[in-house]
Image (cartoon, one colour):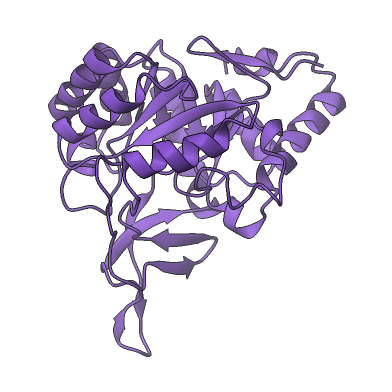
Length: 301
């Protein structure tokens, strides 16, 4: 049975990785789950200088999901390089660094600094976070702005560039095409949906930012639709995510057109979520007599 896939020149043991922001750099999970079993580790967003993030409370539970407004809190690229990349040197899996910024210059700064790092295999450019007031989603909702940041990052990157798209747009196909036209090596989707929750007994917003990003199984059918539309609009590969909690969920995204998948919110519920998803994919392959995972990815529904 073959679960290996090729993605932008990288060989993945299997198509399963974490969604950025749900797994740190794997450090906190390393005593609970086997990091070497993963197809890749996607780090939390890294900025040129430390970001404090949004005021608390920043997380709220919703029906079949979760809202967050962390605001891309991170220690900055120098701490990341010395602490997180050093930690990841001990693991045999691909490392994709998620990059965040308030401006094109900030995205480029991180890319410049980390392009020479051997432990970095690719960049995922976060132009889709709904919880920061500038940068982030400002680039991810306007095709022209998405093209600008993609082109500048590509000029400076010596690694494959994956643009992470926002679902908070009118046409996900147009955004996927804009990223491809600007030279992106791949795209990933979806990030969270902008949402709101009010505590009717406290008579306050459930999170201090008022709005947050909705993730989890509640958004999965919408994510599958958007991955299908994006994957069938471009020729570059797609990482699909949005509420994946089982091997069957992952298979659905692969059949929709994704070449790899990422597990997000479910990591908070189950520290072994990704290894369970990998086992679930293998169980599906055994049950259906599928010898090669690429047979599923190549399906033309």
